[in-house]
Image 1 (cartoon, rainbow, N blue to C red):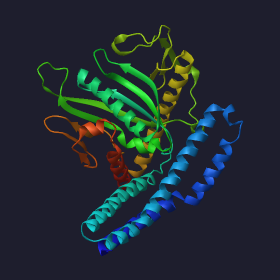
Image 2 (image 1 turned 180 degrees about the vertical axis):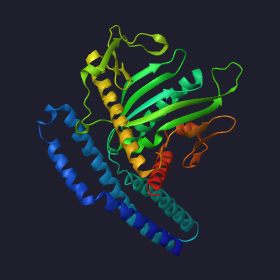
Image 3 (image 1 turned 135 degrees about the horizontal axis):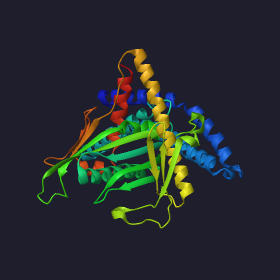
Image 4 (image 1 turned 135 degrees about the vertical axis):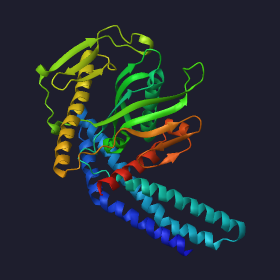
Length: 371
C-alpha cells in the first residue's frame, strides 16, 4: 500500500476513534437496552406523547450506533481492498485501485459528517426544531421565495426521514407565503438547523415581472428549540388575548367552514402567533401555545445572553442578518456568506441538498465559539 494511502487511513482512524469516544458506544448500547425495555411495556401507549418520545429516541439511538459501527467496519475493510487491488495486474489492478480510492473518499465524507454530529453539545441542541419563515423585502417575489424555502427545508427533512409538523401557513394574496411555522421532529434538530437562522437572499429573473427583469428578494428564517416541561415557561392566561377566525388557504379559499384558526397575543411582550393547520380550535390553540412558549424561551435566552455578553464586554454577538445568497441569474450559485461554502447547483440545494451548508456552518460556529 502506498505510504500516502496508509497515512490517510491512519488519519481516518484517528477521527473515527474520537467520534466513538465522544458518542460513548458503551453508553449508547446501554441506553438502547433501556429504551427497548420501555418500548416493550404494554402500558407505554397510555401516554401517547411520552410513547412517541421513547420510540423516537430509540430509533435515533439505534441509528447512531449502527452508523458508527458500519463506519468502523468499512474502515477495517479498506486495507483489504487495497491488498486485493495490489494483487491484481494491468487494467484489473487500475479498476480495483479506483474502486478502493472511491470507497476511501466516500468513507471520509461519511466520517466527517458523523464528526459534525459530535459538535452539537449546546444546552438545547438535542431538541426538536421549530422553524419560522417570513417573507421580507421583494413583494410577491419575496412571498414566493418564502414558500420555496419552506419546501427546501421540508424536502431536506424528508430525505433524512425526519418528521415534520406544519403549524401555520399564512398565504400571500397573489402567490407564496407571508409566513409559515413548522416543527422538524428528530433528536438534535435544533442544534443542526439553528445554523440556518438569518436572512436568505434570492437573485433571479422574476416570474411575476412581464418585462423579465432581475429581482432580489429576501426571507427571514428563525429557528427555535421546542419547549419541554423542564423549561418552566409559565404563561398567565390573563396575559393572553385569544382570537379565533376562519382558516384560509391559497387565494383566500376557505379551508374549513368553522372558526377554528387561533391567534394568540402575549400582551406583555407583544408576541403574536397563529395556528390554523389543525382540524379543531382546541388543537390549534395547543399548537399555538407550543410556538408561543418557544418564542418566550428565546426571549429569555436572549436576555441571559445579553447579560453574559455585558459581563464579557463584547457588546453581544449575532450570527444573523444576511447569511446566504442564492443566485439563479446571471449565473448559478449558492454561497454561505459566513463560511464561504458554495455550490454551483441551486436546483439541488432548493430541492433539499443542504448537508454541506449545515456541516460547514456547524464547524464554523464551533470554531467561532472556541476563539
